[in-house]
Image (cartoon, rainbow, N blue to C red; front, side, top):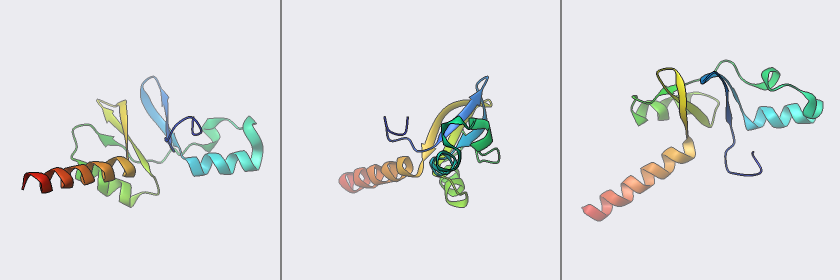
Length: 104
C-alpha cells in the first residue's frame, strides 16, 4: 500500500475500532530485521494518539506536533472514520490562507 499511494502510516482496525497504528518507519525496520513473516501485531504501536471528528483542527495539529507520528486516526463514536496527517493540515492551512488573501 505504501508503494501504491502516498499514505505512510496505517491504522490497524478490528471491528471498526483502532487497535494500533503501523508507522512506515516501524514497518521498514521490521522488514529489514525479520522480513515479511512478522505479524503486524508485533510491529504496530499500541500507544498512539486519536482525534475525534468533533474536535477542532488545532487539537489535531497539537497532537501531531507532540507525538512521534505523521498520521492520526480520526474516530467518531469510537469507530475509525478517517485519517489526518501533517500534510493534510499543511495543505488545508495553505488553501485557507490563499482564499483569505484573495477575499481581502
